[in-house]
Length: 71
Length: 142
Image (cartoon, rainbow over all chains, first blue to last red; front, side):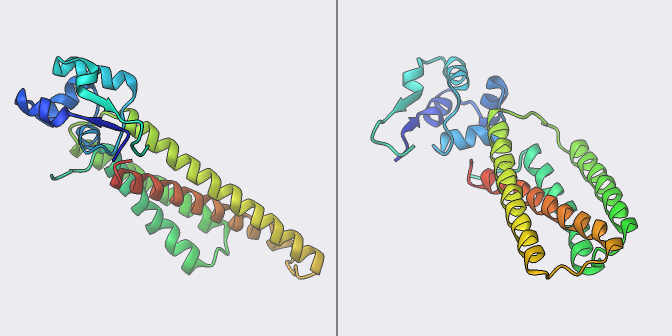
């Protein structure tokens, strides 16, 4: 299980936002959004904040850190 | 979920194809025996890269790059650097060994061309390693 997990897919679905729309608003590629949603890539703090702001939720609702997880 | 290739990925695949198409025949068929062939190969790789990268740029609407692209680029450069550093150490070690053992029978006229080919070969291997590492990183998500 990865150390940093996220609820981006669920939060995005609730807002009927596509991966491309989120990527455009955050300023990353759609492939990066896919990698983040699949827990294969942990974004920088700046990108994490941008994602949370675009989705309109606090950072900790978007991303969770599990110290027992694999880095 | 389908993952289409990003602009950087397409560009990397084009670079790898250009490198294999140009360097492959040069090193495996031409036997590196002429300065003109080296010059021809350098011109060929530049022309092929310009054509391929232009085609990709024209047909790719979204050409942004982000932090993940930069991270993967750095990973590729690290792999390329480690490759060339390792090859240099091995190459210099072999050169020293053969010189000490008296196995070097290169006539002076061809020494320059020989070393040009060897060092150019090291650069090519390091460059291909860099590109391949970046492609693998993209396929593994990072």
